[in-house]
Amino acid sequence: MKIAVCMKQVPDTTEIKIDPVKNTLIRKGVPSIMNPYDRHALEMALQLKDRHGAEVVALTMGPSQAIDILEEAYAMGADEVYLITDRKFGGSDTFATSYILSAALDHLGPFDLVLGGKQAIDGDTGQTISSLAQHMDCACINQVLDLQVESSPAGATNSNPTVTVKRKTDEGVEVLETTLPLVCTVMKESNKPRYASIQSTLDALEHEAQQICLDDLAALLDESKIGLKGSPTRVQKSFVPERCAEGVFIEGAPKDQAHDLVEQLVEAKLLV
Image 1 (cartoon, rainbow, N blue to C red):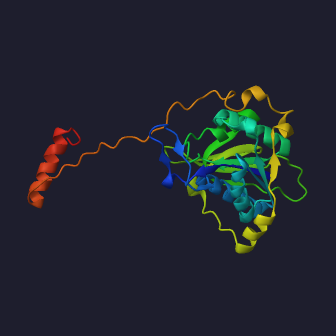
Image 2: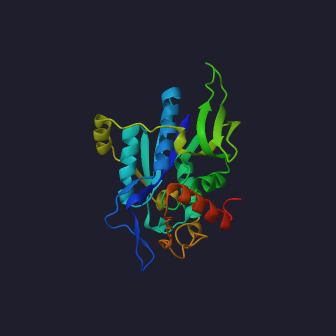
Image 3: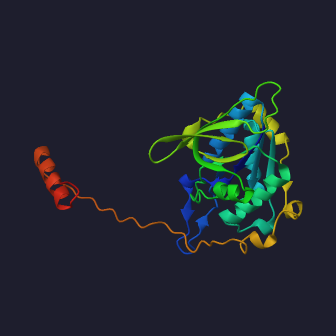
């Protein structure tokens, strides 16, 4: 079984700021990290590797500094890591990005399973992996909590093992059964990502991530569908919402405060 994990390097949103004049993200001085949801997707892939001897390939699209998260993925246990990078890829929205990723997967594959985080913490769209499945013409299951692959009996020639998936829904947990190949988005509740050992971290620094550029994918891509010009969506404006919260202090003894609070809630039609 061959598993691909699509990852993204994102700014640490706990320290992110927005330029009030340009309405753009201020990236200077803000550390970049592996998208936390993608870390859970990688852990799910590594657990399948532990159980079934799968090959795990981690890949990301971005500038040269995105190699940092690939080193981290290799240290955690990925077998190979790939950086998809080219100036002509710059400005790609989620749909164009998923199109490029699908070409890279076609170039490196075939893959039995493709995993990614539920969403990225910078854009929060949750669109890329689902769009990727569309480009790949592959079944997609979102918000996965658990994924079990049925081991084939010794000597079996079945090329499409049965997969049992638990996914989160608004009503609870849904259990689905399907076959590979499959694309999934992974929830943070699915697992607890492992820590890389000191030795594996040192090994990752010596392991060179392979790069994939436009020339490598030229036969698989339509250049009119990549980059800013090939993106069907545009970000018109980014801004920090204005804070307008107003506090109300209720004076008096605790019993009187409670009575006044209830009256105000009833007047506001928050209580009946």
